[in-house]
Length: 79
Image (cartoon, rainbow, N blue to C red; front, top):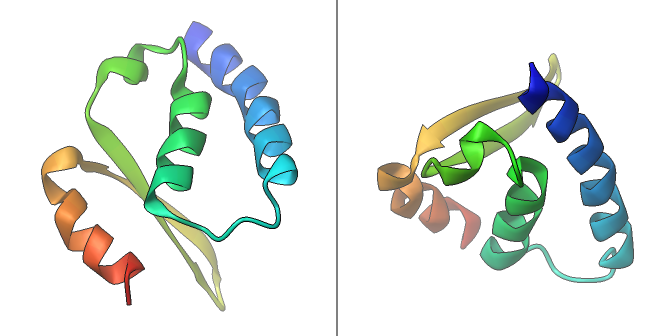
């Protein structure tokens, strides 16, 4: 898929972005910007979804959620 190629290229842009801002505090705006960079130009770029990730002893896991669930997750980030 073309989207896979675009996301692979965008992944490196995200890494550069994160390195440039390594001293910044993680925020909602920063997370949204990283996601925007990752999805830029893909068919997903117009969808209103976001990714939530968690690290566990067994590994890292991520899941896509519809925008309507953002407020629930945003409250978790603020804790």
